[in-house]
Length: 295
Ligand code: PMP
Image (cartoon, rainbow, N blue to C red):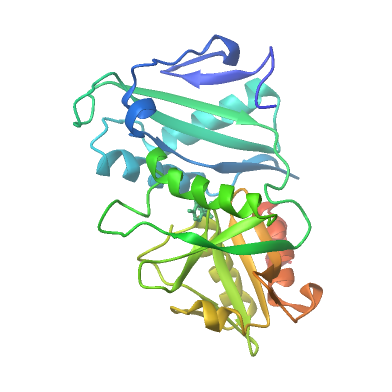
């Protein structure tokens, strides 16, 4: 699904065939989860393939390397150039892009001085599909921000996301919603959350969540379109009195919720801000909004 005979990856400074890329089974990334990754999308726009918010994504990748003390010297601009070249070599315009920094063999609990870096890409549809989601409140919480850097995509953090998604799917739901250590609503296993109540949108503030690039884009779009948006903590009880709810993420884009546990969101999706923002987000990534603004 992710690669075929022809697929090319960027690996330790060279473009090579994906099938020829190998990994070290003694790597700290495999043993302890000490690695950093990103999830980026490119869109086939009228101006050719455009990597959406490439600099922001690579900035977050570099922050992850920095907090984990992993040596990583590429600039955001160099990484962006390499990404465009990789898309070209794979003949892809609509693509999901997965950069991954891994560390070398070192069984001590100190970051290895060896760094490996790969960028993979593949064609990927909407991660959470097109239908409205049935979501379960997870029995797992998001990690305490004093236990790790929650705003970075360190590979080991994703054990929490896998635990919650496994639990939700096992019980027949589509996705999991996680609370933070204080019992406030935090985010989905791999996306941020917004709720609509009485004509206003609310989303949890930064602190216990991933500072999603899609979340920031949606907040921007709200401001441009005059949609009232407030970053504010809210509880599960409050969310279960909301009119509508949606998730945002690079992979998920903007996706609506049908229900949370046994609560059905009453507002018809097509009449909610989420639906409007789903369409605006699509226009933004396809660079149709700049044109609309210009005329
Ligand atoms: N929360 C978590 C836990 C995530 O892994 C992601 C994906 N990076 C997001 C939110 C959404 O972030 P973004 O919009 O930057 O993809």
